[in-house]
Length: 223
Image 1 (tube, rainbow, N blue to C red):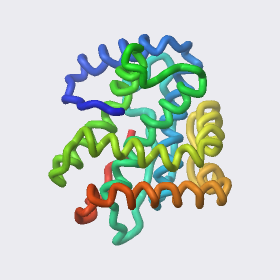
Image 2 (cartoon, rainbow, N blue to C red):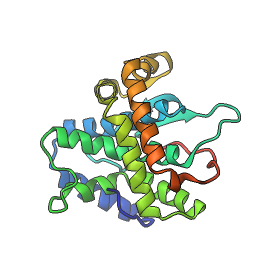
Image 3 (tube, rainbow, N blue to C red):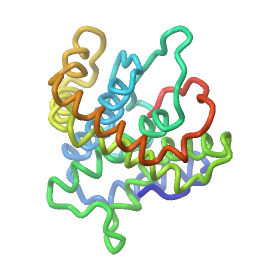
Image 4 (cartoon, helix red, strand yellow):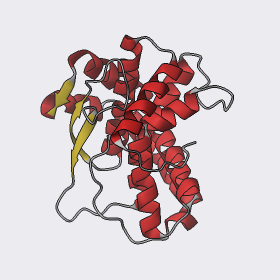
């Protein structure tokens, strides 16, 4: 699960990003694909939870998480309210998608004796910090509640994994998708969409005590 992060200077962030990338031991083409999977995870989960995902961009190659050039863009409808668990799940979807992808390649991403967990926490540091800021705002435990956001994202991702990979492989190749070119990936497989939201709803019910909070403010665009 995600662990706590503290703000870094630009120099510290660059050094940590380069170290984390090296620890993954992946060749550049797979590093870029991992970034695409991360962003596709945000996009698929965000769309499922009612965010209007308008674009996805991937430009990283040799170092992950170094600049803010890998991101999704999203919009909210007028008057739209965001539930705290939805916002946390949106932010942590990239982290969980990266874990799923590495696990699928036979890499035990969350094994504490291997370097991958630290690397993924580093590369998702901006998303984790946003989650912790949300938790501080609502007075809930940051680490435990952020980790629930990972679980929430996982319930959607496991049913929408095919859509995540289709989107990731495409944006990895073309670099940028938006509008009518992006929407078919977000809308793919309606039956899987319904199953994912059913599973997410069960998770929301099981963790209801955590979410007895007012709706959160609009989320900034995740990285």
